[in-house]
Length: 442
Image 1 (tube, rainbow, N blue to C red):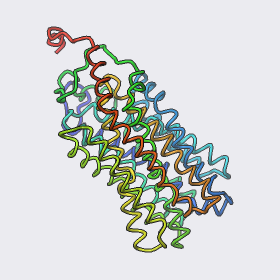
Image 2 (cartoon, one colour):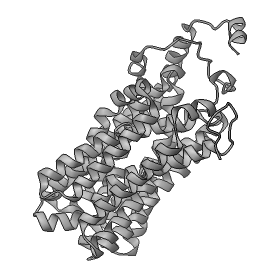
Image 3 (cartoon, rainbow, N blue to C red):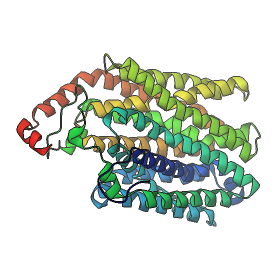
Image 4 (cartoon, helix red, strand yellow):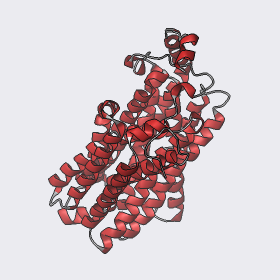
């Protein structure tokens, strides 16, 4: 029981915050990805081309990418809890509008509203979670939170396909909407700004990580520093491009199994969910591997990101060129596991090469690149190509984007020492915090 008043902290409350915020993240991606499970039904009922189907998926990622930074700034000023509640209500109601859409344009409008609701949830949600936990568990919590997107996609695709076949595709959207509204009511009842403030881990009590300068009170590095470090720019570019093929797998695997394995939408969605789960698991495990190989030399994280891209490029290219069957599935599964494996290394590079005072904005910039270059562009481009080459022909070309990602990551590794020098120069220009003043504040 959480005491309503007083300053006493509950050791369970931070985990309640994490559980509810993580559950809403699942709802976020369930509402986003349920569409992919019903692609075959919408294509048949509304006679849609693959490019139009792809636009229904990409409009969400495009809206998220464009609005992440401005809405995150609004949330910091207006209140994070109120912002999260409003976001969740908006995407849930928009998902309900998808359920009653009568044609392509109504569905496109409803999906755009889903993107508006989901735009800043990831950045604001993780900020809420980390505020009530000590720094020693931040990395693990961040990794788990990021992987929640893939796990939500798994549930959305698998459950959505099942509901669509046994009831209708409209009920699939309605079920996701109701789930989100129930969760947001629970979140609103148990989480408040007052309780978060009571359980917050004070910044001055947090031990500083080795190699990271303290952030003097009131100092903030210029936003321009996020876009003048060439190594950071390579991380943005490489991170966004490596997400291209992963986004293609998330969006088009249900249709792939429906068309080339002659599976009904529910079974196609269930099998596709396994591959989506591989993408999410790969993000977590590749992140762990990257941390281990980068302990002695952080620049090795670039090398890890390049290796993950190469493995996925080779496996997916070979898998989609084989005839449908077990050898093809094994190769595609291996490629899916490493498809977004570079997400962790690129995020680590962005965090390590930007000043702590603007690190949240740096991660928002990385999210922008991931959304625009990967999550929005990938499914849409493959949809256009599928109209001309067929879906399988388009899927065979998608992994080639890894070549551009690899080039950006290799360049980022070469520029890494220059990036560190730029960060050091910025840190040296930071006004020093007075020890006496620090003690007085504490």
